Image (cartoon, rainbow, N blue to C red; front, side):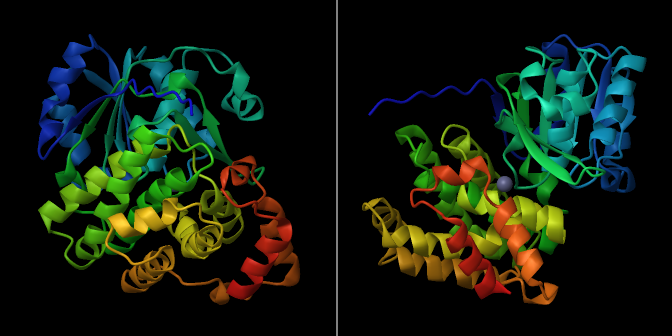
Length: 372
Ligand SMILES: [Zn+2]
């Protein structure tokens, strides 16, 4: 067995550590920065607090990043970066904000439009502006990954772009920032964490370091996700979920996600299902398929987590989904045969090949037909 591992992002984890932002900006020598965030933080007053605490370092704020960020939002960030000649970027928000900011911090250093990189990722520049990523959900793990998922809504395309140049310089993970996340978003983002870790664990590209992160992340989600859904103010449980999100992000950087993420892209693009929920819809189904061809790893995983078998773990995941209000199937959409076929076609993303069991179009069709 031979494998590689590298993780260049410096991590600061702990309650209240957002207060270290100014110190960190100074440490990386930033003098003119942009804060990229989403509209909800305008309302909460957090943006105003960060800008005034970091006077006079943050010169511009772009607060209009929405879920599944569009290339026009990324262009908006790039225009502000150029206007204010920014030399660093702070991203505060969920995965959408972090992905948009990672793209803007890199693409602002070259002249092509964002759409050109969507068509050909090999054109991406080699080095971007320094970026401090502050996640506010638990979460995508985007703060420590080299991937940015962008959408071109006019072309109905959602695409992950990957380059080492997307790695943020620093991630500040402050679990207190997740206390205000509403229950349904907590449920969806928490299931995204579980899918990252499970898919990383069973990926054909699995390797020992990422396995360790994945097993720990799965355990933390199974023990804490229902608690943070039921008790949003439970800070110790929020801390454990923030830890799970980080570990799951580290877990999938090398092995990559596969089955449920491949299917999530059309479920989000065609049906508008939020990313984490779109992944969660199929995860227990795929776990049962993978358990049938298990080489012992899934049985070992289930045993380490206190379950008798992989199918018992799959049952526990199905129950968890029920407990936290994740949709169990696709019945509410009254899908036509044509829509089912569209889902089958668009789920055949190259990452699907990393699932340990070959997933054929016929298997996808059977799955979607069972869920309709
Ligand atoms: Zn994900």
